[in-house]
Length: 554
Ligand code: F6P
Image 1 (cartoon, helix red, strand yellow):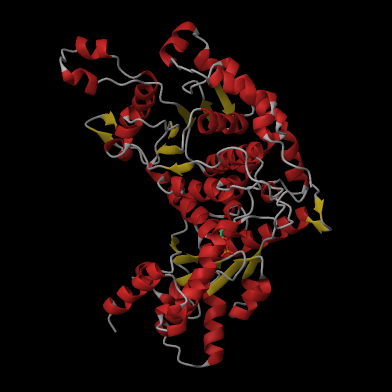
Image 2 (image 1 turned 90 degrees about the vertical axis):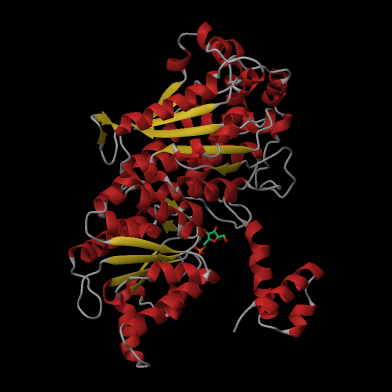
């Protein structure tokens, strides 16, 4: 195993420390003095225009950040990843989500597996299945065509599909709606099955491991709901027949799929080298292939691939995900930022921040490096956000005038999904004016002189002054298409990767979620009243259990 380079011992880190010492950014002056700044720092990444110019960096700082990426071996680690080396050290696995979106026929053999053949085989089966459901050739047990697919999954087996389905809703043209059940809170299943007709509902059980408590519990409940709704009693053959027409599975564990009672002919596999949070472009995207159609699903994959190719072939100083990754390092490790806002000016992307939370925080929320040694610096920002303009009327105040540094990514599209006019004015134009206004206000602020020139006096002047120098990156694209969405997701995957390599992390495991899972299983008997399980708890947990038992009716 190659040891990670300690970033704090690189020459670039020392330079950055010096550059950060007494650093006093001045975007107004930088733009005034350098008329080319916007052009120079606006880069094209496939269909995306990425404007980095409103970030708090000089050319000197950016060059040092790029050298940090060089010295920590970002390019070499990327090459190792796409070649199938076991860079997921704690699970001894390859990390090959990039192989899910390569064009057919590009040979890749890893650990004795013909990756290309296997990926294409699943995609071809998925295409055919999606076509059958969309055309009505696939029917439920009573012969009716499918009107609703319900994806049951959690984490990476939910967040990607639901985010993409919402984002690309205008492309769902087969009259098939998707719903998503993730939470073991019974409310989720109760609400998402409300109004559904069991005869026209197809459940998709999505679980990489097929052991996840939430997903298997919900899948069993959905199966009961189906049997009851179809009026099937205890007849085993009728039950199995109903499941075979109303349940499919997406998993790496086909043996467990069969144990659950789903015919493996109705299962679509993927492999242990696809991490959950990197799996929306695998069979986990089945709900998307069905609702959007196989062709659009392939366009979505092509978008990812275009960005993968950019990362593979572009020098670090022009490599957009690498540059965005090193900017995040600058803010986190040198300027003290603790969070990062993602603000889509696209209502359709309302689940994108939640999706990025798993991608970034499950990947880089770590305190040990890939060789088990402690990290040498802060890692993993808190990612959060909401679509503009809603956020403007909620939390933007803190970004504009608060005491914390919050780098923000703004994402916008030149064309609306739903063009509407208000009194002859294009509403989308008005929407985009807000995107431009916010990034401008954050960068350049408003001085006390400017406030006074508007007639404000006294204490109000300070309250109405904006310091500016609040960093933003603007990501602009013509339209929110399947391809562009694939590009956006891949962009953030590789930003996350870049930061992970610099910090020396294995961005592909998630041991931090295990303890809670284990304890929930231990506490479940205590909830049910098992005295020895109650006695085994700590005093606070025992008191909460007592409160529960006192207040729980029935
Ligand atoms: O608990 C975390 C996690 O392992 C995620 O990484 C994963 O996406 C999610 O659970 C769901 O796992 P599975 O797809 O195996 O049900």
